Length: 449
Image (cartoon, rainbow, N blue to C red):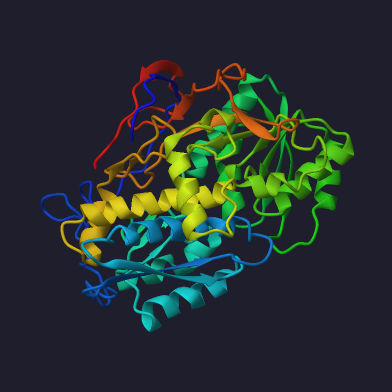
């Protein structure tokens, strides 16, 4: 990626990182420390889905239901793969992607992935969205030794070092929750309430959030949950508003995000809003009532298509051009669509860097990847070697309801940053969670070609 020419001010929020299987002492490691990926395969077909002219891949996403907006991820992925195919594909092979709808139902995800692997004979799975959905298929893909790449979750339970045939794409929910917890602490709040989805997704966030708050003497108040299929969260909002905490942490998905934010606005309760990245997309924010969600703090690691500071960004211009050509019905301003494009960029780099086009080689390339693509923020790296948490950087941002845009903020002061400046919160290994936050500068890194 071409550098913007400016150095990036970064903030290091240091916490421990999870080691990857194969880093020493694990039965899955070979004598030279590399991954022995095929040792426990029930049935290993190294080149299934690869022909002289094609590479067959599959994914299962919520194309319908309350999570249909996150499911628009597929438009960006399909557009990038179509662009690569038009340029000759991978060594002359075109990438064929089959997209199936699971409606965010783990049972349906399992059915879809079974069909993709056993009926359609795909080479690998890419971009499954969700924690519960990922868990529904992860072990089967591990046992069958089928690549399960760029899972759209940051749940630590999915980033399990034993699951050597899987790889998450998001920053971990631990990093995201702790970054938001630190912002609440820095803001001087005395109490935080929580509303979260009642599943592995919500639990991962809550588990990561509570400890840092309590360690800092911040009271954790009402903890409300909702089931993914529940039609309303009115009762939960009433409970939260009655508690009247200084801040509220929102670990929600899909249309529940605007429901929660609109409900808080209507309740006349005015807490500091701390929200997971899933709630900060254009499509979901477009469902907010006037003034709802104002000053909400969220995280990002990519260049949001609606951010004015990237209006003239060359990478986003190329994205928009390709989307108009290959996915004309998609909304180019939707963050989830952009994320699909970003995953497509990572996927192509991994496929091209594999020593040979077989399943084990591609997984090794994914585990060894040290990549930066131009739709990521400068300073963000997909660095997988030695960890199950490849993206270890996030930027805090504040939603301005008047302009309907996000502004990057300083994680310490909460002040808006000048356009073009970032202060990344970075996860580093071998340093204790209590290590001091310190400021440094870093130039953008290109990573491997």
